[in-house]
Image 1 (spheres, helix red, strand yellow):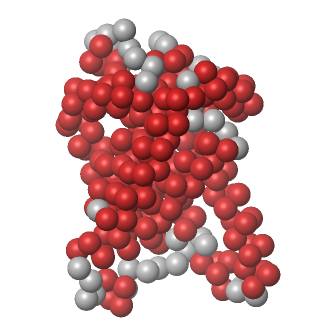
Image 2 (cartoon, rainbow, N blue to C red; image 1 turned 180 degrees about the vertical axis):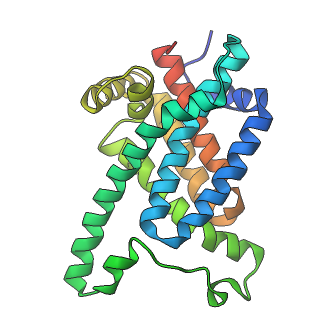
Length: 236
């Protein structure tokens, strides 16, 4: 029986990753490229970051089905199922972020930064030369770390930790997913506090000290989101 606890979720997530290492390595390398490309603009960075995070939940579902039930599902199925909702969530967050930035830019009369939200080429020699490997990866993935922290804050305040998997796997509306997710969080407060505390600590410390591991952090958050949902809601 699966344990509804933080330690149980963490062990299940690591077990799930170990069951399909080639899938997760490929996923991590691919989103590593996507997260780095996000430096072209904040809008693009947020879209790629949020989409990568939530598509990872679909990949976790795929590896779970392959390892436990032997279902003949494909990786394409997992991506095509999760991608539309992940993009919708990403675009919604980008819109909210843009409105906030727009108000701030207008107030500070920083008109040029309005357009830079959508495109701002930073892959220049000035930004990339004379930097250590750690400094370069920190610069490359800084937007991805900020986006990940922002998503975690959104999920713990305005939405629910379980909102995305409930909408994806049970076809709940956003309000239904938020309501049912918050009820689950209330029932399992101790485990959720430990889980979220662990994630924030890992993202802050890992993203700051070892920025090269940012794609791995995304993989871990996606997998934990899936296994915690799976143990509570028993999605088929």
